[in-house]
Each structure stands twice: as C-alpha cells, then as structure tokens.
Image: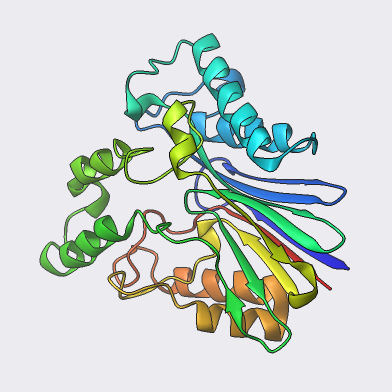
Amino acid sequence: MKTDMIHEKGSGRINEDAISFNGNLFGVFDGATSLTRATYENDMTGGFLASRIARDTFLENSGPLTGLAHKANSAIYRKMLENGVNTTDKAALWSTSCAVVRLREETIEWVQSGDSLLLLIHEDGSYHIPVTNYDHDRETLMMWKDMAASAPDKKIFDLLKDQIRKIRASMNVTYGVLNGEADFARFLNTGKAPRNQVKHILLFTDGLFLPSKHPENDPDFNTFVSIFLKGGLTALRDHVRGIEISDPDCRIYPRFKPHDDIAAVSISF
C-alpha cells in the first residue's frame, strides 16, 4: 500500500482543512468559516476549530465510523458553547464536512458528510463516488457566473451575501455537515466497498475540485481521474492552481476565493 497527502493553504489567512490518519484510518475535513467572521481560541476561526475537533476525534480510530462522527459533532457543539457561540444562529455555527475511510482486510469502510468526497478507482480505470447531493454550492455559483457577465465592475461575493446566507441556513436541512446540530445524522452517509476491486482511494476537500466555467454542469471527474492516474495528487493540485492563477478575480471560473484550501489523501494498492 502506498499513500500520498496534500495539505495546502489557499488564499485565506489560515488553512481550515485538516487531515486525519492513524493506522488503517484516513480522513479529510473542510472547515467552513462562520458568517459572523468571529474568531476564537488563538484567533482561530470556527471552521478551523471544527475541522480540528473532527480530525482529533477520528484519530481515536475506535468503534464504528458513524459513532466517531456523532462524537465529533457533539464535541463541536460543546466547544461552541464554551466559546459563547449562539448555537441557535446557523450563521454563527462552526462547521466541517468530512470523508473518512477505514481499511479492513477485505473491505473499505467509509463515512461522509458535506462536500468532502470519497472516490474509488478500479483496476480498469473506472471510478465510483458512492455519495450524491454533495454540490450544495451549485446554485450560488450559477448566480456568480451570471453576475460576472452582468456586473463586471462589482465584487460578486458582496452581491451574493444574501444567497450565501440562505445556503448556510440550509445546513442539515438540505445538506449535511458536522456543526453540533442533531439533524446532521439525517445526512450522514456510510457504507462498505470490497477492497479487492479497488486500486486507488481518493479523499479530498472541495479545494481539489477542478474549477469549471460551467457550474450548472456536474463536476468533471472523468478529467479529474485521468489527471490523477497520470501524475497523482500533485498533478491534480498543479492543474487546479494553474487554472486559478489564470483567473485571479474568479470571474471565468466561478468560485468563492482565488485559491481554496486543499486536504487530500490517496491510497493505492
């Protein structure tokens, strides 16, 4: 077995993504800054703290993966209370997505929530993403694309603040994240896959998604897998960063920031 990892800060002040690995367990976590922009312990954001709490909880690598997800969610809730967060205000909540696998002798166990993804590549180069409904930003990015054309002199992020707040208010209503809310369990995905049918396992946060001019379409994972098979995680990272550098104002390839944080793990057999 061979593993590779990338953990890289984007254009923000800190890297809110995290990686967890302990023995046969690997995971990635994408913390989301609360819309209040408040900071807490050591001037860290809620997104940073949520992803680290989840990372540290899964490092225990004991019991069912769903149990660790529940434990992480509860720990995020307790930490928010300790820091005086208004947990009735979704805009203030600390949150993180997750994608975690545990390797058994014959199976791959996994748990996932939000837009951190698990992708399995088979011997013949075909691939499978065992979850759906992870692209909760699609509507917003479609609006971003329209505004890039109609308001070339405006800061799009500011124009879309109400839309961004609407999507954040949908946490654990239409899509799931670990943010202390009990309803996160409704959107927690879990399953098993036969290990002997898998050549590569990829875990990655949305910072490794290929930027697209057409957010109305499904992400191009055919190209994603092709790039990985030719050059691994480094080639994917370089491809993404190259596109981002070509569009620093985020107008050709709609996205929320010039460079997003990246947390990614590849496991090859």
